[in-house]
Image (tube, rainbow, N blue to C red; front, side):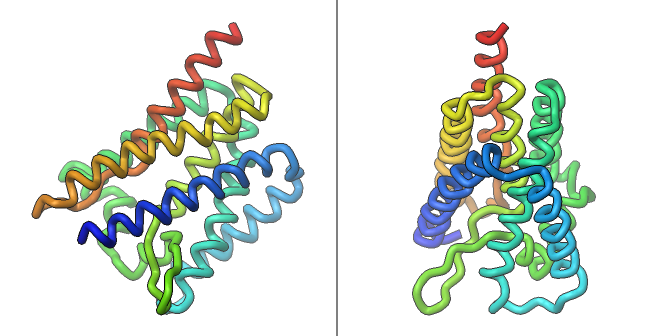
Amino acid sequence: MEKDKLIHAVSWSVLYLIGYGILTVIGNFLFSDEILIVCSLAGGIYILINAFFIKYKRERLFINGLISAFAVLCLGILIGKNLKFEEVFASGVAISIMDILSFTKYGKHTVNAKAMSNIQFMSKLIVYGKEKKDVLVPTCGIGDYLYYSLWISGIHTVSNSIKAYLLAVCMILLGSSIHYAIIMKLCQRENYKGFPATVFPFLCIAIQYTILYFWRG
């Protein structure tokens, strides 16, 4: 990936993560379970129909990404609010391992790896920024956004303070920043094929979970 394009992608990703994280915190305190269920179901149906039954069109990618991001935000909150500490932690470990495997030769047959190999299909599952002249800038996949909202929402297992939720957003941003710094180094290699986006955000937020868990105890 060209460095200029990568810088644009990182800039949009950070901007979206800040807004997405804040909206996730707001959703945890203001969205009722009924709203979360309705938005999750409607959004999930929309994502499935768009991914499998609607023909690929570049013009739809931007708005599709925003709708999908809001849908997985609601789903992530709904799931995260109903998980226990051990379940949040276990999900993070499992997701990170699967994410890592999908970028290796051992995971080339995983669903994630197969999806990434289908460019048009994968394009429908990415959230984009939009610049002048209708230039689309990819940020993260909707799966990554789902995990981020889930991990932020799972903070209820160790603290009900809004400060803890906001700190969780900061930890996701810190982990993502580490991720982007690594990508900036790796992207210059000829054999660069990407790097799992969930690993460092989870490691950073896992530190917060662990500290708050033992602090509470």
